[in-house]
Length: 369
Image (cartoon, rainbow, N blue to C red):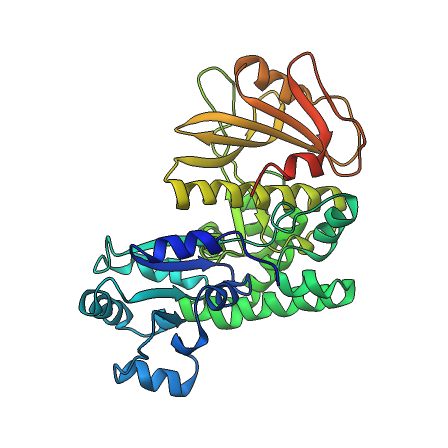
């Protein structure tokens, strides 16, 4: 079985505090927890006998207690606080749950200072120890969620994506928010992959669905909270003539994107976000993922910031191509920023006179997490 990239971090953090593992549904949170600790300490709120044990405050005596989906219980914070304070540092507590865990943990501060929060992301090229184009294409075609990736079937991947979207709406979204026009929200979810990678016009979606601008904005916020999509804001400083407001979006399940070149860009976006979140969650670094687009039409797909300053520029191309004008423009203004132009199926690998690394995506993706 593949060892997940957060496994050692979870073990180390458990020595000091409770650990919460969040992230998209079916990304492997429960499997990771059971790799870290024995099943004897596993309690799932959705299992009736486990729920009874939690309600009666009857917990196994074991080194690590694992609570799965406990945030569905109104008093879950009080239970964890009592266990953590009452049993002392010898009792390790690991909490996993659906994407809503991240939403609900902000509902109060009774656990403040008692836990570390780690976000688990889909599989990436570095995590599967990818070695070449075959491994790259497997990720591109089957996605980074463990079940479809290891099944390695295009048909099963399509079935999984369809069922995943349905469960996200029926089990997570509806229980989290009161959404009246659920059918139109489902239509929006079907429409979004077609708009992936470009600045997202809320007015265009509003006109298509005949709902208010406020509703569209609210639905997008929900989907982001549920780890269905990510949204990137534009990067801009006084040195560049950047656009100010328009956001781009990408999907955690990049198989929803049919265009292969845009799917590749989406896959790179999730890889980069995984690395950015890893630096935030494990090292406390102030990192952020953005994109660049200026009023003159120059673009760079991704900009990674740390403490508000760019540390990486990444431009994605499907095949070998000349270096992007937007990338040259940014590199000239931030000479010390690491700059990459990566290709999905291209062969070229060189360092340009502007100090821009041009190479296959497999080389760059290995440098991430």
